[in-house]
Amino acid sequence: HRVQKRMYYHFGEMGDALYFEEKTFVLKNIHDTAKQNSAAKFEFRTKTSFGGYADAPKNIIMSWTLSPQVYIDKYETGTASLLMRLHAARKALENGYTISFHLDPIIAGHDWPQQYEQLAETLFNYIEPGHIQKISLGVMRFNKKLKEIILKQYPQSDILANEFYEGVDSKFRYFRKNRVEIYRAIANEIKKYIPEERRVGKECRSRWSPYH
Image 1 (cartoon, helix red, strand yellow):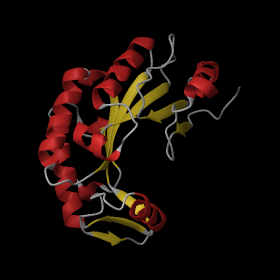
Image 2: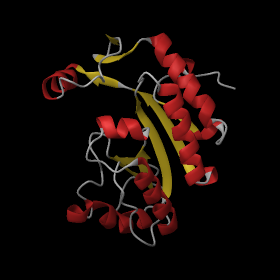
Image 3: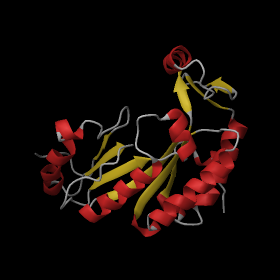
């Protein structure tokens, strides 16, 4: 299959790209396409414990969304644990994939600084920093429809306990001063391990720089 050169194809923006892999084999079937189109990149984003297939081309990026384990237990029930995701990332490296990670959504629980400091330490103790293509940061945000679903299906959840405001894009976010504090604190932890060019923010740089 021919695809557009130098294009970036992202699987998993709206749902887990590998949740049904054992039935759909989308990742497996994309191997040949990726090998025939080495200038294009194909990213599969997941929260699963699946580490892919052998003899993978480097232009397929397997990426994991990471959260502190206490937040996984609380808000991501039914997904792989933090250590299972990191073990899968190790396996993906062995299989030949490029790997990356997303700290998104970052949730400002009452002890978030300690939780994300521990997450960074666990990540980089488990995965050699030089093997990571990038790490992206994104603070929690949601639209009105998702807010209604949370309130209806999870009325006891405290995930909406913080103060939020509705932006011009109709998404709710923490107030700017809180987002700046979160981005800079977590970026300061990550910079201990990987250089700036491999750190990506989901908002403009003024939200989380300078952090030197």
